[in-house]
Amino acid sequence: MMTEDVRVSRVSLMRNLVLVSFVAGIPRIIGAFFLRKEPFGDAYCYIEQVSLLRGKILAGTFSVPDLFGFWLPLYQFFCSIIALVANQPAYVAKLVSAGAGIGVCVLVYLTSQLLTGSQRAALLASLAIALNPFHLQYSSAAMTDIPHALVVMLCMYFVLTERWTLAACFGAAACLIRLDSWMLILLVPGIQFMRQRKLPVISILILALPPAFWMFVCWVATGDPLASFHAHDQYVASRLLAHPEFDQITLQRTWFDGYRLIYAVNIAVLAGCVTALWLIFRNWRKATSKDEASAIYRPLICALFFFAYFGFILLAYFTKNQSDIWPRYGLIMFSLGLPVLAYSAHQIFTGRSVLAQALILLALICGVVQYRTQAIHLWQFAQKEERARTIANYLKQEYAADQSIRIFCDDTAVRVISGIPRAQFYDSFAAPRDKEGFLSFLQAKGVKFMVVPFEAETSTPGQLFPDLVKDPGDSFEAIMTSPPERREDSLYRIRTKETSPPG
Image 1 (cartoon, helix red, strand yellow):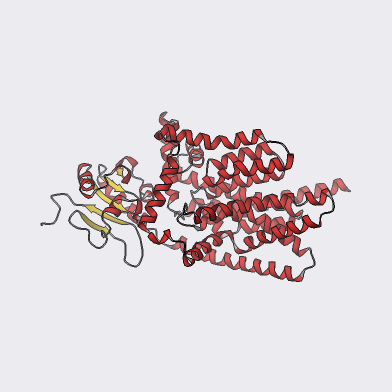
Image 2 (image 1 turned 30 degrees about the vertical axis):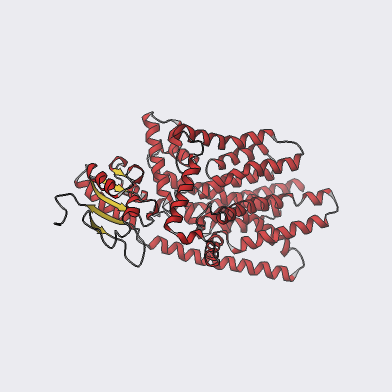
């Protein structure tokens, strides 16, 4: 009889995993192929980096300094390896995210099942993320948010099952995708030490390797092992200079940024994780045996992972190392927190407290309402005309007529969508920072068009000519300018001495 129950349980587990994979996979793969736009401009930077790395690998010129950039390199490098076979860097990058999104949904199921012992609760939790509109949007994007969440979830899952070397390896992978995961260097060995009561030397070495490797890459590429940190500091300083209001922590701004974070984390997940802390403490106090005390180990670990990432974002924000909180930052906490919500809901609904059941039910209803808001935003996003594509199509036509044209463009989205070779573009990294020098640079390089992004704080022309939209002057001819009521990219033609209006 017991063997038969185990067999039925395994069949049910496999059936649910297949169901979750299909429900999660179909919309994500469709989105990767047919959702042309990216939800955030950084995606085009990743696609461009994937293309550059692929080209250097094929040409046999790839070296360690090529990994250096503003972001950690694992996602881009992994996608470039796949793109060696499938020469479609944009689709490869999006499909890697889609596959990662499916993996996250499966891991939410497996983790929730470990925490609750209930396949029904685990299935509900996994379907909640599989059908989440915001998670769907970023699972179809060439961004690191979902792949990063996958390796962090794998790290947490192997910590829960006490396979420490695997946990350290996936934690190390996370450390090479996003900087916030460097805290795993302390978190994972700390948990292992508390569990085994001995120093986990192997885990520490594995987790310390990625930061050491990255600083080596920075040193080889620039001579400064902290070059990427300095680049980040310069970006934050430029953003604060352009937006002085971001330098003040006001109640209105904190409320707005807090809402953007909760938008992705989901109010039900946050409530479930806070509730879990109370349940863990209560069960620990009531524990009368070692087995009862060890029963809180798994929910405690998941809560630690959730609040570690939640706390990191808040710390970076309030110490002004993070100028903004974007909604996508909450995606990893949404993934980590859903199993904890499943644990809290399962504990409360199997208990006797009517008040607790009513409160958790109210939080779940609020979470469902949030799904409706995200679905509306996803529909609006899919329908909205993309400004970068409009400008890119214009430049593509110009390039078809004259393949020698040079373009100054600080918007990576325009460069990627246009399909024009990267060698035809110049950007602010290679341009002089003064007006006279910049204009001479444009003339000397034979630049015919200039694209200024709406976020002009890191764009030289945007800084040198802050009133460019209202008054292009004698040096530029406006082709597509940003409307007064909204901030958008602008396109200008560079006037030569022959085409400049008479003085």
